[in-house]
Image (cartoon, rainbow, N blue to C red; front, side, top):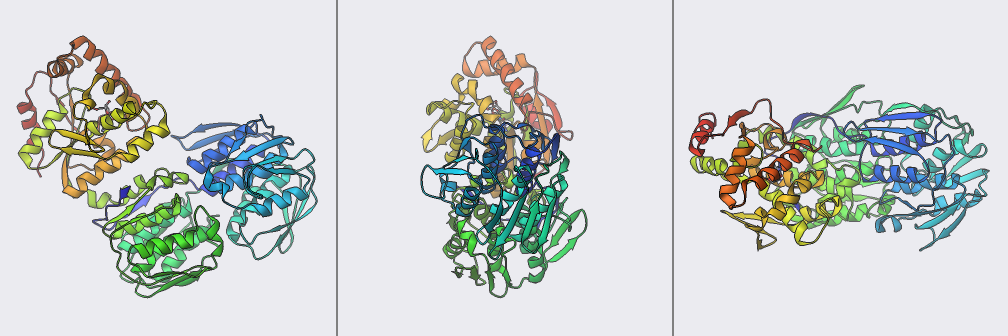
Length: 637
Ligand code: DC
């Protein structure tokens, strides 16, 4: 569950968003098939792209990733894919499922393709039919024309092919991407009225960049030479679909959002979404390097076909209730087969929130109205979760039942959303106290909270609560996914000195040596940090501020805190204090806290570090009163 805090001020921000999913997955395929080594810059690291990386590795491609620098280095196989016999797991990724099928055929041996339950429900019949015409043997493990399927391209040959593109353009993109590495030239004709044409253009333009020769012989007929690909240094554009949520927020809140690196010459069709915002009344500025949207006093309804940029249809759906006149979207019947039936999903959830909305089969109609509080079901669909977050930013009481599904294409989505709140967060009376274990932070925080009338939050106790549950449930603290699921599930409630986790009193348990031993591993898990950070920020917003203590409050949670303090003391003094509190031997504690300091300061995600503008306080040899006084002389509520 995630209750979305409404914006308290309109945003005004230049955003650097992560790379496009569609471009990253195409670039991975092209680089994998190319001759030579390619470097992909601003690559997206998300469920869908990790699925592609994983599948390509199983087809013998060497891929080195550097998530921190958003870089991927791919050693191309010059079209010579080899299966190591391992099944390919596409997770929930539609692009991976479709693009990998012809690639698996190129390996010319039996390859099993499988994935998460959601993808097993999505149809791929058209693509399987074309592959069969190419001599590929296909055996379905479950339902006909669905994954899991065994693909064997031992008898692969290429002829004149027809592909129907009424349901998804991904079938055609999949065949095109693989075509230059086929045994001979491919002639491809499109049947039907194609949906999502811009994605096809993206495929063709990227194939061209990687050195392929594709000729559009006449309209809807392509000739692709079997000439292979050449490696490239390739810069991926920021994700235009993800950008839609931020542009929409600007339009709805009369704020300003600029997305850098997404220019008017973008190869992503979803930038057309800002044209609709413009029609509705927003001000849009486009240049080569960026697109900026400014909200105005006018917001009127639109009637539009979104056939070419349907991924942003849920974004439009959440703007529509705020318009002065009704809106309707058409041409998108095919999005019923995406991660969820997206037309039904947006209509049902808007109705739940008191908005009049209608499913027209080919799209939806939405009436202006006021959103009432409610719990939105996200259908395990990232786009539904992200779109309704926008609604939560401008209305009271919108809660998502499962926010984590955003990880499919935007794992850091809520961190970016928090950037929209920077203006509002600046008004909060936040005192951030950071420092190593035993430096006296908790006593100080309590004391100062008392003096100032603010509440205090011991964020370490939140990491400890997750650790306690990990131990209770016998989970391996290094199993990232399971630990994240716990952090996501549990409720942590503080009542004075007491801590309740899922209703159980765990005040003493969270301070036990067992918890001390695993908490740093739990706290080094980026997924856990992201969930707890969100809760910490929300806690302070609901109270107009507070005294927060931990390791990353001044550096990451509230970098704009009114005052940041870094408290430290010698390791011996810290161990002595903890020994007096707990009655345990000082030597043992000294070892424990120096071990924890090391992990806390060296982890990748928000390590314990000193903010440049923090007030440094050495508490060695000082009383709490002395230190508190020092801090209070610089902090005013
Ligand atoms: O402050 P403490 O000793 O109760 O913290 C417990 C652990 O949680 C510690 O190893 C570091 C981690 N922690 C963190 O990483 N970030 C915070 N904001 C607070 C604590």
